[in-house]
Image (tube, rainbow, N blue to C red; front, side):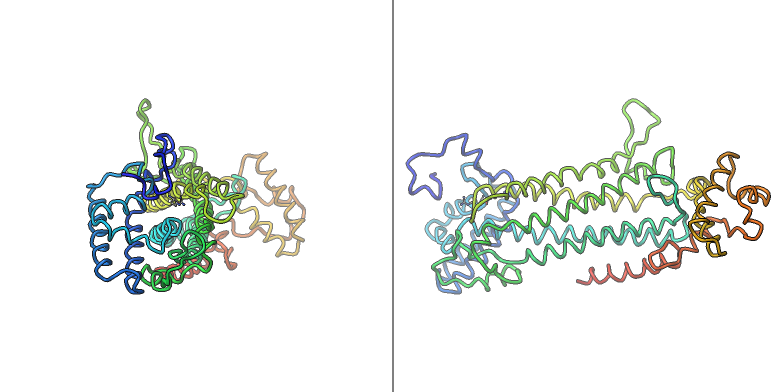
Length: 462
Ligand code: ARG
């Protein structure tokens, strides 16, 4: 069978070109959207009198048959058909003849391909959003269970100040909350219908683009047809949001890896999320956390790939743009699966309080609390900082902790200890004292959890 655009051609396409040019291998997954787009298009063509009711009915029922056959794997496509749009149309024409040839009235593959991608985009991103919301809920639940579970807070990977597990998890909640907001914002801008843009300049037929927008569930038609067939901003925005979110996944995953190491033992990752070694029988490796840490690489790649593809391309459609799909599909699959796996792994992860407590006694975690206390007793903070620094040095030389220092030790460090006293040196006391807005005190983290939960419920309820 000749190509659907074969009229002005004398030669068949070269075999190597046919393979190179085709996108059917990866755009087949758009078939549902392609058929939905065509049904909306032909419905509108009938309503505006461009095709008859009868023709519309024949086309719609044939398209529904094609949809079923693709779903049941009864149709095989070849690279000669080039892409899913031509493959569906060619099958339609083979099945119902001349009537099928009317479907493409007032339409170009340029707007058709874009309406398919936008429909797919709106549907897939909704599911990614649901995964992100679920992760937010798992974080809220885990945090709620652990508002009093103490944890080591680090800066520079050095013991810094004590915090709680809930506080640490709520830090990730904030990151994923912003990811959700970015995705919602991207979806809001992408929600436009390119159908009816034609090849680039619109169409001479008196079509109703508002009607197809309504039929397809878009909030409005795109404003400018040249922009509509050339715009891939929304995919780039998506890839950018996905990259940022996968960076968050990667950071969180790295924490799972080191928390789970024999040096830390802060957590036990469930057996069902680890693998063994083929040689070393004792091993339980955090492979899943490591894979989550590494998956970000391909998503950054997808973003840079499409940014580079789009750079310098003139108006309007260029075949370069066919390269948008694999990058978008890959990032969608990766982001969605990674969030689902991360949620499931977190849900089954146990924080080992005894082991964490052992670590809390190291690293002079209450040093800032002592310095703050001295400052409250009248010593300028910069001087109290220096005094506590000397206390640390003194303890390191004696291999002891703050709690082992007696009055003589303190006086040897600084004569001002004659009149000043040390504060409560307990870890819980230190945590409770940080009750500033945004701080780690359980009372404050409960507020963060409450606000987070209210926000999340708002998203869930649309
Ligand atoms: N497969 C093409 C794409 O991915 C469809 C548009 C082709 N249009 C064209 N004028 N060659 O965008």
